[in-house]
Image 1 (cartoon, rainbow, N blue to C red):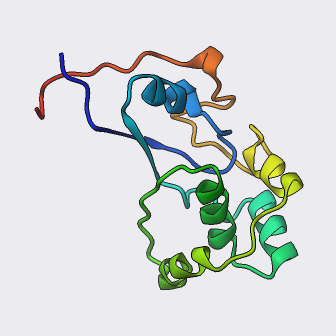
Image 2 (image 1 turned 90 degrees about the vertical axis):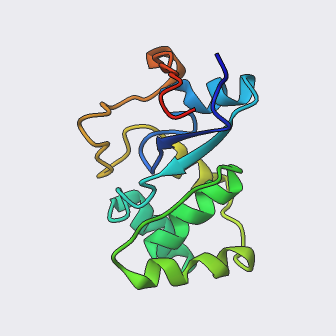
Amino acid sequence: MRLPDVWQEMHTVGMGTNPFGYVRWAHERGVQYQAYSVMSNVQSQVARSVASKHGWDPARAIMQWLAQLAVPFVIRSSTTDHLHSLPVLYLASELDESDMSVLSSIEQHGAAVPSQFGAGCTDATMVEPVVTNRWM
């Protein structure tokens, strides 16, 4: 069966750098991983703290974190300020190692991973995705 060209998964602050192991799964199979729902934890204490350190909006900190992880993402936002942050990413100073570590940690202070995804999204909890030809 042909694998998809792009694999989209929810990926936000509090889920680590490899939610459910899907980043690695996609990379190992030559599938482009793409994050969505990246703003679902935009009001987490960690995102606000890192953003404040740089004088940024928390949305910009989250997008910068994903950009530095080289994770392509799509955003949907009812807040136009979040959308206006996108062009600034290319000019932003990078997050330092400490900021990246804090944003990449799993189960952060005040960062609630949506209950349908559970907490502690790691390779150990990875479930092999079911790929069907429904859309192919």
